[in-house]
Image 1 (tube, helix red, strand yellow):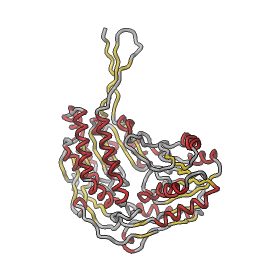
Image 2: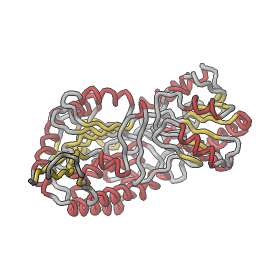
Image 3: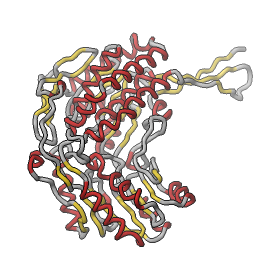
Image 4: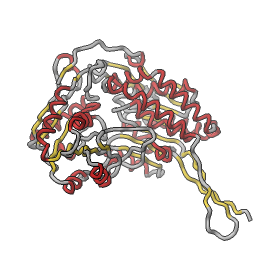
Length: 498
């Protein structure tokens, strides 16, 4: 493992230690309680900003503003106008992308080498939703009732959307929630993660600059147990779109019962990544490694259960471990860094506790296995890329989501046994497989119970291709036309003409 040297902190204007308010009804305001919280750079511990801390009263104000906008002038805005607003926002995101990617790096630690690579994805999503704006339509349906009765459907915006996002990719997570809301004519109250709220607030500024009317987008930073809970249970919220842990997802489902609001959930995972002996191992080694080590393992669909065919297990896992040792760990502002810090001290404690658990369970760390404390990195929340060998299916490191740069390498012998073991998890978000055999690829892809299957690649994403989970990884889809449908109601209309 290579460790980067200390570098000067770039003082971004939006992360210069100043105070940031929340956005409600087109105005930047303080929390009703006057409370504030701090957000810090996880690589250095340095204060980035203090932020207005929203709670129930602020959520009430934001929902009321969103309702007024939804039932007021926003309801008269035509699809072409909404499309134009999204295109303007896309242009502004593209123009300001370097600063947005830097904000993500400062606030949650992902290296610039990663956040800068999201330009096409971030801008592409907004332009995709802009395209979908004018493609929303119902259908005429020939019914079988006697007489002359005409029947058709309308697609209508669901209403006020409560959006709750995690900290592991603030830029794209924000766009994933507000994009379809604007496209369909909904309004939204966004609650960003308290660990990384700055990018969402900056995007809200750009949305106002693009001309999106007051109340259509509201951003209320705060904690999950206060602001998030109030949004999930609010009786005037028509839908909650949530990305985060399955435990919080379950609580949101319970909170939604009050007014039976629509819910879409993109939750956690413990995804299998399968390497067959006939795979292109030169491609599979970095592919399987970065399926976990990217973003320091803080990706819900990371391929953390690495299943390797027995005949190549020792060679392949050893090569993945050597790959991990060569990755450069450090402050994400260094463009050469490949692995940044974990987002917080709490996340550091969680991940390092699993490193201890794995070794106590009998797994062997071929690479990593502990916190990085060299030089300037001692002030941050760094964990070295870790590869555990000799992992058994029933070990906790093979069953529980760690959300850190930790691979659990598991051997398998035959395909029937493999599929059963790969599916033996409560989750079902992502999965991968590496093989040169096309027939095998199709057969395994069909058998895996997961929302995404990547073959000879991992984490490929596109605005037009749906993403979501099976089982405890949630329901509903993001991206693709299915995502837009999540924000629409279907109304049937019957007209007797004679």
